[in-house]
Length: 226
Image (cartoon, rainbow, N blue to C red; front, side, top):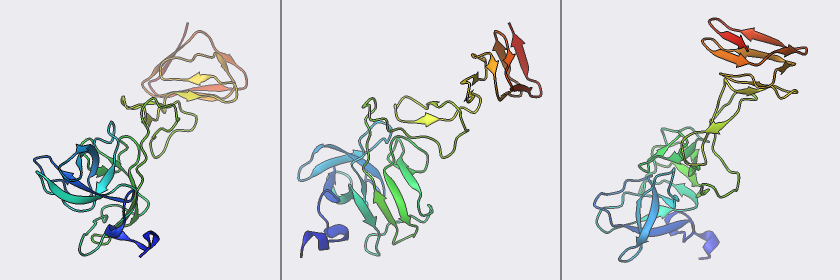
């Protein structure tokens, strides 16, 4: 049999890798793991924190504690079967998964994505393991953001990983002048579009020059002109 004819657990690295669990706790199926050195017979794994660890793969089955042997999928399709069920029924197809701080697959971003669900099924689930790690400060420009954002809002870091961004709906760049609408201060005093002072916010400006624009002061909002 040729290598390109192999499927499932018959595949070799980099798709699947035999590993051992040298921790004192068993590691369940569909857990994100990282390497922890060389074990007695195979590379040793521990649960991965998606925000800081290089996720090396997803466990295909439960791997027993204290030297238990099993397989991880480190790149490519992880396909469930009756003999080795993969339960993806809690996610819809196309869901992007991340590794939590405890190695649990979740939809909430926590570092780079580690897998994408392709078939939602309690037994024969299918996911593609991405193995896409971006080291913080690497300069590659790859970051993770929310599923939606406010148009022209200024993004800011979410946490300290160097890879996660969050939306800032109250800090918006105005086009085309570049005036900044923020929750605390209007930096550019030339307003050529509509900007808003959100409810319960106080904005400060050194002066306002309306150049075809307007300012909407919402309920209980204040605009202080110095």
